[in-house]
Image 1: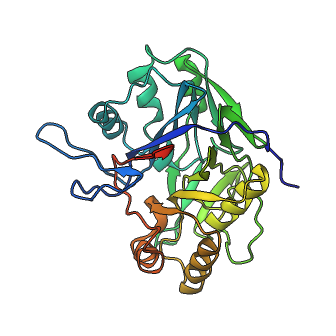
Image 2: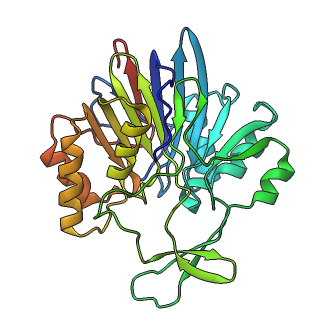
Length: 320
């Protein structure tokens, strides 16, 4: 049974800034909802194989900020925060989508750099197994590569965050909801056999049971769905967002869709299902994969926006 959060607060205005992502292009045109960061000497965006968002929600005249994911490189993330003019002191929550290093790599450095500004005891929302050690089987390599684990003890020693494990859908700022665990309902969005997790003394296939996404209900527009990697399947995430909110209109789907190197039939069905949701905007990012991004651009041209690091997306009255 999908937990209901149907009384979630509607957001008057939502601004999502992509702090870092795999790709940067200063010359991308702005759209009705997006503004590209324009580089200039001494003020350049860092791009990497990592993902981080800064989110601002405005409800009834009050604004609240949060960070969702923290990229891979703490130096790059810190630079982008400065370049983009983000005030890290005006946040009331932190959240992590899952326990892969390209989403938590910048977290400790972020806390050390901005700890004096961040309210002590700020909640850091995580799913189950966020601190587990992960491994990856690389092509032509039979030995799994250790890709690390987020150090819970180190985080706690900083004395800044209160770690909150999220086991159900919940509103973490007014109008900003974490999905909680995401049920797998599609038959084609399967676990990747090359992604492994250490459970006890055994290395097993990672099922990403604790992966989280975020959902916002924008007044007069519908849902904005924000994913980290979507290891559990981007279509599963969207279906869960619809069920947990009871809202049928989708304004935008943004984030990693984890369709890199996916089989053609899986990409075909994913695009078909996403098209059936009739989103106003589709913004694949991070681990979606170049070929799949091109497919979305060709097959959903009126909805598609090419994401780049530093881009700001604005939703709500007037948008843009």
